[in-house]
Length: 345
Image 1 (cartoon, rainbow, N blue to C red):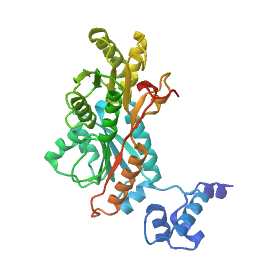
Image 2 (image 1 turned 90 degrees about the vertical axis):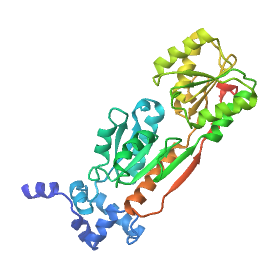
Image 3 (image 1 turned 180 degrees about the horizontal axis):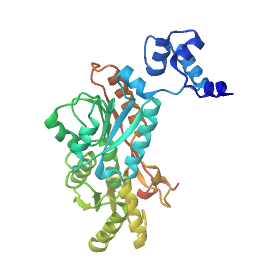
């Protein structure tokens, strides 16, 4: 009985799988640890994976790290001031799924001014992670890199703005979708179009801001702004205060969908009719926008494709540090719904 129990509890090793399949230990190791190894055929890799699963093989991460010089960990950097919104939560979920698909575990680091230096030391330790995906946290990281230079750990920069220079990047081009959104409001007869944003001070080269000012200037319309916090409950109060003091505009053009949802709630509280009294347009394409009584028009971002390409680029860079710079540009698209005069769902 003791011998049977010991046999059941013994860890399955690579040499056990090799012996069962009558192939070399090195072939099993390559098949399990390197998904794009040109020396291993797809048929062999699948046979090894199937046998490993049947035998109950569990990887020894410490041993793998010592043997390969890699940890099996990658890190996602998010800008801490915006991480509470639904957009960043969705990016985290999608990146996590893609990391697992590429056989990595994902760690999430929040990058903000108070913790930036500590987080950078933590993440850029080459023994800690095999690579880093930096999502729209460019200025904070670039400020730190000014002192230390580009770290040796592979980097991929993602997002619609605040991307890093000189590294692999997956950019979402918001310019066309943002311009279509503002034009949609202006062409539907909305004259007082107010831009609600939680990043008024740092709007700079943000495509949403540039599209707003460009389209309104061409239409001879005045720009108006509401500077809000990044928390829905406070935004709801701030938008209500704006309406009570400045009157009801024709449309709210919102920096993101979280702001649009909070503005929607504020107007419902005040009895303002959407879209008859005020139109609303958001940005990001989060799922919540579909499930309101009046579904929200939004600029939808191709986040699934962005996350897939980011992990693909990062894995390729980890495998081949001298690979040429990889770049992809994805387009955002306007989805017109009932909140701006589109058809009822």
